[in-house]
Length: 289
Image (cartoon, rainbow, N blue to C red; front, side):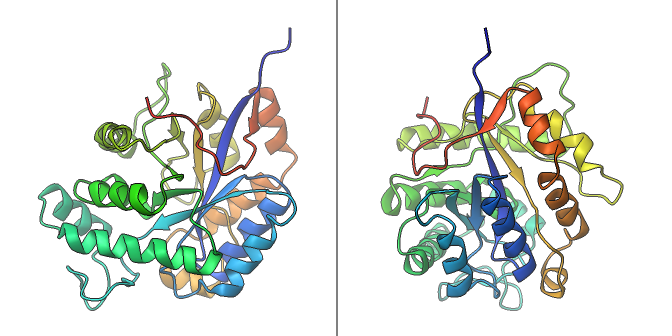
């Protein structure tokens, strides 16, 4: 008897960060190699043309779920007025945001206002609420931020699902410090999401050390092992351009991921693991539980 296929979400983060990143993500969506992307509306390179090009891929047949990539770290600027704290008009660094969140020094009203502004910008440009929401550099999991994030999603995008970043529970999976931190932060995030009736994917994968010697084609099959139906894998494909280099340290690895997802090896790996991409409908991947 043929085993049932497991359906997953393969989500490309950072749509809108740069023209090259957006073009790479659209290429993969058009080829149906990924089925979700989250949009960074705070990027100086995101605009109505980029949104229209992405929306066009869903005309007639929906090829990808489109989500909001809430951004609260440097080098990006807030969309709301009077957001604090800032450094030279920009959000704080990731480490400073995390330290402030853990120490509960962030301003919850300012967080809610900024997240709402990013969500409203998404709705204004795309003409509809996001299918899902997550956070750039996983900030949506941090203390204080998660409360504001979930509150705004529940109020303004109640049909959206959210990304939790707890791993699948499989023996023999190596635990790096980042994976462990995401596991811990996701416990409270899931509990709070359940309390608000917000759905989330049951498991998460895709985290790895971003260094030059990484062989993504060798890493990816490990992300699939033990994943339950409805799980989400994060990825960062894209073309490298000068705009990306000015904003982010993750550059050449994006082209490595893009090449892998465009290769013949990628669909074969999915088939070998009994996995296929979930139909990209605007439905929750799994009920809260």
